[in-house]
Length: 472
Image (cartoon, rainbow, N blue to C red; front, side, top):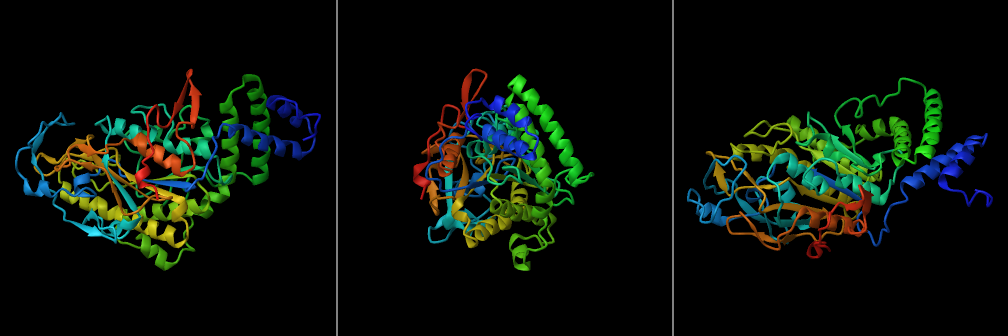
């Protein structure tokens, strides 16, 4: 741009560029708008990771049946709880319920993991298991919002949107925040608002890709020629840009950016979702060739997550598929209020092989060090039974784990009491987890803010401490 125009405001430069008769003016305008919408990014200092994959276990995985072994539970099975029991979601509380699953040490670290996760167990030396997570909410929708956004209600940006906002897009042909679904998976309780950009610019909200559909995104295949679409988009851009100048509304710029991304996705998404060039060994590794349809569907998500990382997508979330066991519905498939042994075994079988495959595949391709994987549900489950064979929700202590992205593998952080009821050693919150994730991405969680409604918001609200002990 010439020195004669360098003093102009962004809006004035837009108008100047719109007067240019050649197409170069519109190209420069497009670049300027992308810069303007990304101008609020914070300094990225010494990043270890470039992308995040959230394996979300909607419904609430039982920590005492997965990653937090409690021999005392087995010893005291059938006895009354020796401590006060807080109100639960259904208040149909029974006796101490020893885990029906055996635990054993895995890897050089000897990290103890349940028998229902043998494949993830084989990756134990990559895992940092946080056994002292807590949450303030005990209901699914609130819990899902709290995990995704830091707030237990609708209206705030998801972690994926914050990371997209903080880092900006690395691939202009794809959205920087993607939620994968397959096998009939649906959003957890709380709906698509869990993936919202909230008050952040709209281009940071998630795009949902149906991994096993002919069109992963509805209407992705154009009904018009590219030339005709280009003409329409240029016209819409001109009108919207004029309105944006007069209204000073950043969401209009975001809408323009979304139009352009959608235009480019027409070729990028079908190519991305085509896995026909993957080897038979890779398909087998992820379980895509399995006769278990839910396992195969989740495996396809995991494989696409790897491909999205390869393409520079910043944040990817995988979605579980219901087995319809023990109250676990489409939105909360891990919610075994009854028949926990059968339900958790079936759900673990669905995700165990694909997630382990993802870790191993990323490592083999040299991508695990720059990809941070987070495995969590919205809360844990009680050490006592609900009814005959289920467990109710437990927000007072549960487990999650992180892997890759500079995380110290083979680590167990914090602890619950001997029955797995409450976090008693190094209790932490989702704010601490997201502070740690952002730190590994090179972002100070206290500096990633956005002003809305007269105050500065952030993913970690006014909380959060980096879990330095699990960082490599």
